[in-house]
Length: 360
Image (tube, rainbow, N blue to C red; front, top):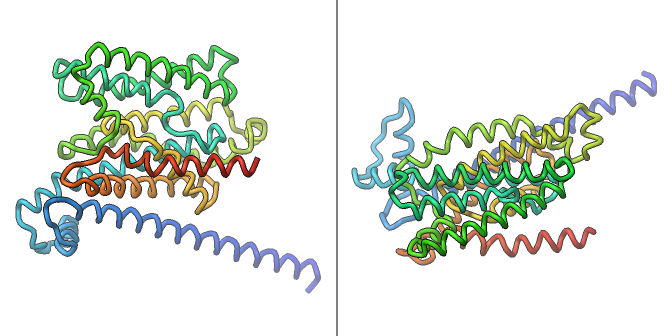
């Protein structure tokens, strides 16, 4: 055999080993993240004033599977608590956490900035203004007024940001979009403060929403946001390679067949759709979109092929466990979940800043 043949054989064998190790690493990553979500959901189902056993909950969950019939031993009230109170709250926590984390990772990839989060483009301020208007209006706009106006406000916020960014320099640079988002957020926050001052009798309800919560009315909130979350996640996950190309810079991405402006607009729109939907029912829960994607990046690398699904899984698990902590710390009272995520997220945010500075 020639030297070239031996060299080619060695190269092929090395490539094969690399492919196998990469596939094995991806399988381990999937197994780890699925286990994390399952464990967090189980903890969320078990913690609460009503005493539910691990054995009873697992059997009742198994009994819900098609073709499986087992006696869990749970009483009818316990069964109702599991499926009508705790399960909707846990599922909502997974959806909200996964969407905020996915949106955060998307914004960070689009703007090539690990400090970007789902509220960068006026989504938070717009949703806050919409929810404030709905709360002070009371029952005059119907029972779904807060989610609907919060969703509309979030969409208006990002549209205003892009409109302002496009009018200044064509909106083609990250700096223009970020500065436009800051300006829009400041304007909407000022309007929200003005509304609160005019209707100060609703301040308590407004602040409760702004601090975030996962309280649910059965499965209503889950059903309301699920279509938007699914659409947002599918669009973003289908463009994982695009995000990797955008990370190379606009010139390199364009040379590889990607229209940076169009791709950026599509990804930001999809992330905003999901963020506005979950914020409309959960309130303003900060730091999830910064903490979870950055932690996933440190643990599993920066490739969006892995980063996006891992961020979703870890984000869902993180918010469910955070909600458990919020319910447990001052039980039977309940801390706003936004307070808990801020306590965890603020030090991590400082860590990210210091890490970036040390690299500069």
